[in-house]
Length: 377
Image (cartoon, rainbow, N blue to C red; front, side, top):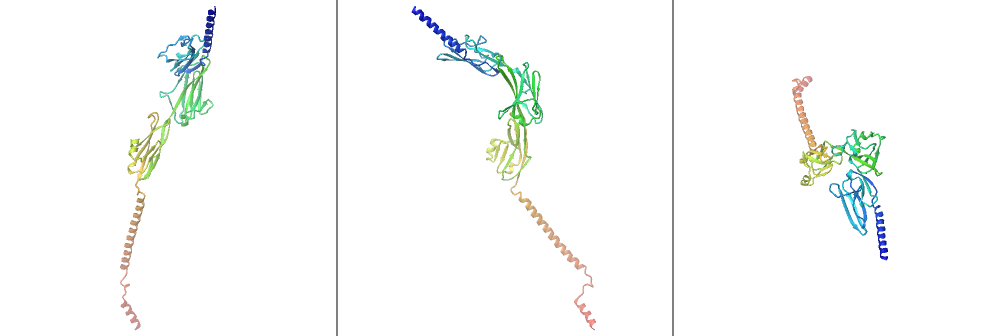
């Protein structure tokens, strides 16, 4: 009789422990949630030593295969087991209610939103090209009925997000039944430093509001500006600055007479030439440095490449002296010409004065005396 009572008491105790453990296990799941196709998720679950670990989705046993992107993990604990269900790439087929034991009265519901919910007018490179003053139209088309579509943009540096609405004069927003478009009316390069977001808000069948976002990344074609000519005296230093525009940050290549100025070129030149992105510095210039230099920016691995040339003139060190010597030579030649001219002119005047005298004007001293003697008689 005593033995029967002990057995009944033990059975009741086990039932209470298992029941308590089962009630506790029903609360180990996280909250229901929704996510977008292509994302990953993890579901955690705990069972006691008296429970069987068996994962199910919608009351159907789950098998770990390479095709369903599901990985099942488990580890022993002092009171039972802890388990994880991991999905590396979620698809709409993963939508459902998950639990790790059939006796749990509830599990965790996952809702996966398909990528086809939003269709855009992105190009193959997944970016949009902005040009100064040229309107650009961004489009979002959805497959859902009565969608809630909104537009915003986020700065790529500060990550500050700002909402775009129809009241903004710089943009034009048009919403139809299953589509919405955003037009940048007068874009500038500053607009290229934002990512533009098309957001679709929808409710999942677990009552959670899920926002699906399509991001439009902007690029700004490269441009450059540089003086057409630079002049330097031999032996002095010269710095050339090339102003570059573009987004993302352009890659820059310098060329001299169609030959790329590489690191090997700089080292072989004894460090006379230095390149600091948009700035080219040449120290102790030589006559061989004379020629055409080009600044060539590009983005996206060579796309939208442009070229800005400049010509460097190297003057001789004594070049300032040549004009002075030339002026001195001109003055010396002019003085010689004037001196020769004056000498010839004076000589010709003397010769003319001798030939112009008449015989009567040529009186001798004796003739004068004779006249005075007759007058005395």
